[in-house]
Amino acid sequence: MEDLSHWPLVVGVYREEATLQAYQAQLDSWQAWFAREQSFALLRVYATPGSLAHPEGSAAAGKSWLAQNRPLLQRWVIGMATVILPPQDYARLKNMQVEKAFGVPGGVFASVEEAIVWLQREVFEPAGMQVPIGAADVAA
Image 1 (cartoon, rainbow, N blue to C red):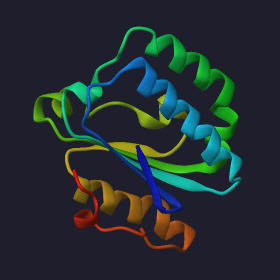
Image 2 (cartoon, helix red, strand yellow):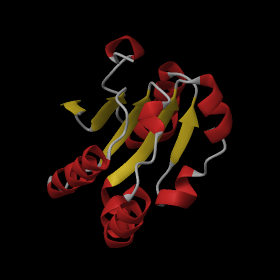
Image 3 (spheres, rainbow, N blue to C red):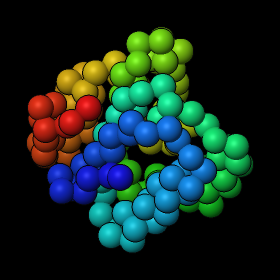
Image 4 (tube, rainbow, N blue to C red):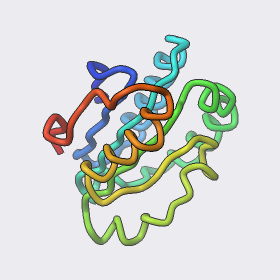
């Protein structure tokens, strides 16, 4: 479940094994965020190998959702920081091109601290804002 208490930063910490139902619920959450019609950034923390799993059907659902929602994503999302805590998974995913995949500024990081520094420097500071959270506030 994502934490909206730091809006305009949405914080999601994922530990559980990914399921298609959870993935669909996450996509549904995006619709509610877009409905706010306010710019926001994301800090997504994948804490376990299982949280990174791609359940059967998720690739097709994600591709369809992205095709339909890319304009909203590009309109409202000002940055996306993805933290991959399992070292073996970070090594595999660290070169993912977030901007190419989603059309918004983003990066993949090995720690919450690195992600928050990037969010401040690349996303919040240029907008004249401060990241509304510290690494200690994220229960990874």
